[in-house]
Image (tube, rainbow, N blue to C red; front, side, top):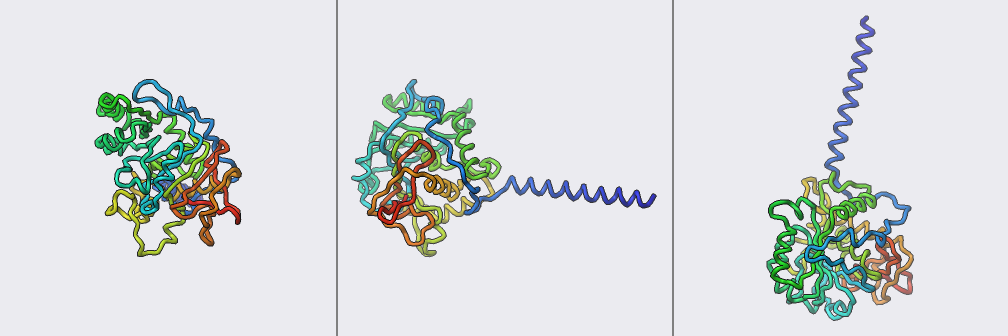
Length: 339
């Protein structure tokens, strides 16, 4: 009799322990932190972004046009302070299509970042900052096509909808062309991130960055992409500790670049971006592609684990073969350019 009681007690203890372990595991998974080396091993090709439907993915906010869907040669101008002093403005101006992000201005910085803006990708959190300065962002470059992204709860909520705010701006500026990333495409961006990293964005309490949206949109729309000012994923681990670089070129007294990257990468509190993880994804896409080139004038840093990254002045030049973000490692005779 006592033996049966002991057996039942033992079974109860084991079950209790297993349930406790499962609860703890679920809790830890929900608050999972991204680490620099957290990308899953990749042996497959990235998703073919060229097959994503432009018509279904981007909904016109003003009028009933379809998003212009093809540029042969594009440049992405990041908001990085690494661009200051580069005098890249004239080179950027010569690009067929120029893509900028959020409320990054060109007035006062055109010598380094140019003025031309074909597309501007804007996060839901930056809508008001952009619309409050129409002389800078609407009138200065009237050819600009705006692509706004955000969760449906922010973009289309019944009261105070951001879509309605943008539509009202369109009444004042009738030549303004604007699109919103559709709810279905928002899910595709999430699915792409999960497929590339093995991490669920929502469970990690984070947001994809505007840089993520911009990079993927560029691959969709452009045959060739050249990125200016984006640092490699291992940059903050190699930068001299006392060196400070503002996060944005237009906010010289703003937060430090690496402090921002690292705090966001490891935050458990939500509403943060996994900047370094995203850069590692771009790096993995680049290394998989076989149809790219880069200018020989951009030397590769000795010992760099991502050979296509180099100085901010060089950028990251890519040629699209229809999938992923196409960049390959450079040969000794043709060094690759960096972000």
